[in-house]
Length: 277
Image (tube, rainbow, N blue to C red):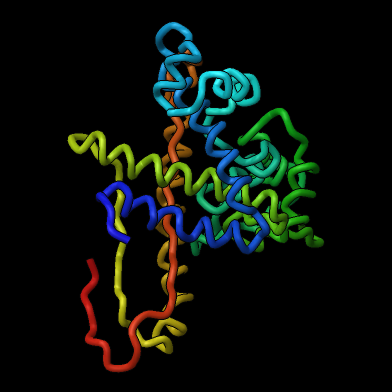
């Protein structure tokens, strides 16, 4: 299907989403209704710095009838804020990231230590770890969450980290992380389109003719290569979090740094090899 560059890009962005929605019983009318409300919410957010936008102005910006705009504004009031994981999942993920990155929780080989549940002397403990992340939630509650998702386990000596990433098995929580991660990735790419003078990091490797058997062999190694990058970045960010704590009213920002991986079948045998970009 021919089209202008924006239309071509939209097809590439939406194709995997539409395929997923079809597979899960989401028909076109449901997506259309959702997009209509989202158009109104985002158009209203664009005018948030000025006086409250009128229904007529939002109708002009979106192409949606004014009476429909009025109805949708009530339904979507405040819905244009960026999605974020549920507080419990977000907290558990931060605890895991700190445990896998902060030097005081690592052994001589750089692996996460097995921690005693409660403080005993000057050494690190799971309670101290949780308290360093938040003072509002009991360590027992966080531990129960980590055990539930298989990220940690209790042992006779305390608590052991089983995975260096928090991954919930619940579909609804996976969808929350999908919205947060992919949403921020898209915001970063769109920022680079509109602000080429101060771009965010946006890099990827691309190969389209690697033998399938080689990818089966290399895939675990590629995952391992990503881990130290994220852990080193998280250590620096943990240190940065403590800077300026004496000025609680100082401006703060959020960030997301991610690494992703995807593969699928490409050309058949004999396809010429390519180069990484």
